[in-house]
Each structure stands twice: as C-alpha cells, then as structure tokens.
Image (cartoon, rainbow, N blue to C red; front, side, top):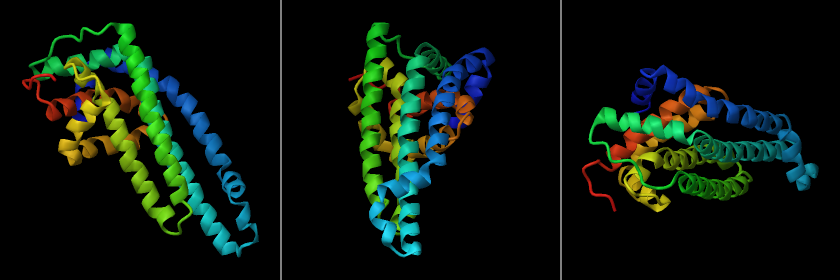
Length: 242
C-alpha cells in the first residue's frame, strides 16, 4: 500500500512536491528536538537514577542504558505521532487532495465532505492531540518498563514501534473515513481492528520511515495516499456510511 501510494503521488510531481513541504518544516523542528535528546540522554538517565550512583558500575550502567533506550523509544513515539498530526494539520488541503486523487483513481469515490473547513481543522487538531496524549501515556509505561533488565532493552522498543504504528495508522486513514461521514476516532479504531495485521503491515513501516528525519519529507505524501488505500480496504466505498 505504501508503494502504491508512492506510485500515485509520483505520477503527480507538483502534488508530491507540495505535499513534501509541510513535513519538511516539521522535520527541521523535530530533528532539533531529537538531536538535543540524544546528545543529553546519558545525563538524563543519570539524573533519573540518582539512587544507582552507589551501585556496581555494571549494574548502574545496565539500568541507565535500559532506561535511556526506553526514554528514546517513548520520545520517538510521541514525536512521530505528533509530527504526523502537525503535518496533516499544516497541509490539510494538500493531503485531502491526495486522498481525493486516490479515491478517483480507484473508483467509487464518495462525495466531498460537507463539513466546514474551519470545523474540520479544529476537529483534526483535537483528534491529533488525543492521539498524542495516548502516546504520552504509553511513553510513561515504557519509561517504567525501562527499569526492568533485558525487557527494557528488547521488548520496550518493539512495543513502542507497534503502538506508534497503530496510532500513526489512525491518523493516516482519517481523510478517507471523514469523506464517508465517519469522523470519530472510535470509527477508525473499530474498522482497523478488523484487519490488525494488514493495518500494522502498512503502518509500522510508515512509522519507522517517518522516524528518520528528512526521509519523512519524501515518505509522507506517499503515506497519506497509502492511508487512503488502506481505509478503502477496511471500509469499501460501497458500504453504507454510519
């Protein structure tokens, strides 16, 4: 689906280039934040674990490495979900156009949504904030799990990627669901849950690629197109809207 998304946007170079501008702006901001985190992660881990100062070096190092990985994994999760929400809000008309192109290319396109533009933007921002808050809550759990030897170094990053992919997928299918009158997050989650493997098979690679600064600039327009393709598979156009 991601490759099909690339094929769709690359056939429309102007649309692809315009769709790359919002993620370019947000990439610069989030890259600066990520670099600051990575540069200071040793100090942050030490600051969080003053009780380990008197431990044997191997134990304190193991704890702080696990904790550092948990903090980075959780922070990337929040950043990617927040990055997606901010980028979609900045480029809303462009990504709606990409979704529209996919709908018309595949046929049985639903009519334009009758929601006022301002109301649509406000709802999109509100829903993105909800997903960011969920990702923050998951980050707190990952932070706590980071204190567990071995688990913090192995399971935590995997869970972060799976949760991040799921939340990202929830964002990317939004335009197609909105066009069908399904404007609540619970509508998206309900239909995504019917095909979890397919959803994660699309969303996890998108999540990993969008976590790479500036790679996201090229990937984001294709991910937006792929999200519409996924939404059509979760909810065929012929199915009545709720």
